[in-house]
Image 1: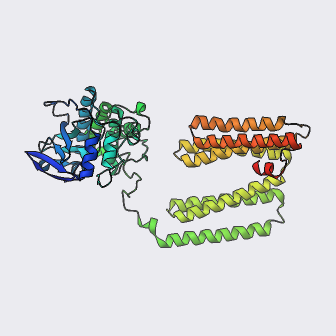
Image 2 (image 1 turned 90 degrees about the vertical axis):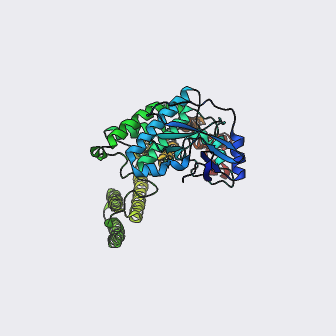
Image 3 (image 1 turned 90 degrees about the horizontal axis):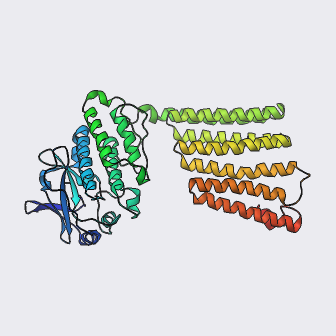
Length: 464
């Protein structure tokens, strides 16, 4: 039996009691606060039956005989459409609780059951708890909770608040697991499909948002689940399932033989190695005869060819080959940029620096929108710092300018850009970077005022 709190369930006065380790039982008792007025009587067959449970030092006493009921894992394994229908009933039960001012606070798969009458059941604590208290009690040392934070809303895990939106998050997380076989844990599968399942996936994604105010209510989620359950009961609804073949920590389907073919992997790796060696020889032989423009073109061609080879390796799932090829492409591209910069005129260098700065800032924004926050942050940080190089090039080209004015203007622009990024992203890393920019400006300005040069003595040069 799938025990809700990881203990041992047995009969108790016509119902069930779950025996717990004493430290866990004490922690759960301490988490309880005021009693709740739970719904009484039959609320209708399309609403999950609310089954209260009470926590005591002897364990958890449930208001139903769980031995005659079906736990959630068995229900979802038997029929996905029936599991979704049960979740829709659970959502309607949560809506009734919320209308009475009751927040469940611990919605997870272990509290969803189906009774012997084929009606969904929602195990609900008979006492309210402060935010996150039940979760932290389940994580008490010595306890063996069936699930930890995979289905808990972010605000519940931090103990800030538990609201109706927290229950909406838990219901959406269970729905996501029913469709993909794993908890979301911050990684969602975007849906661009059509139909009821696609609508449900978009509703679930909204309900799993970090901000509680932006989540739909449990009643809205229940409506989407109910429509998807009816559609999923038909064979046609399986076409265009937005979650089928969803990536996750466990493979949804066995990989094809071509993806793991050792012959293919060795062929691609050797081909990449020989291509790289041939490219190096070609660059070496032609370096002295093609001229400056030809050298830049040659390096750029090698970078593009290496990147194309990496794309081919990624297509055939040879991740190591893709990584090496992309690294070689980055190396060729860096050398090409450096050489082009060394050969360019002052105006050409300024144009290159402006392009690199703008490209880094735009690329960082696009990377974040495409779900790569780390790469986006790196590109945005690089772009904010490349503004230094743009300003330095302007100062180098303006030989008639003297005094601290150009340095102050450059530092003001760079610091403003970085502080703006820190403010828009609410990111402490960019705030620290902006503070470093301001410190570099202070050192450079002090050096100028003291020594007539923005570099000054070695300590100022190191700071800059």
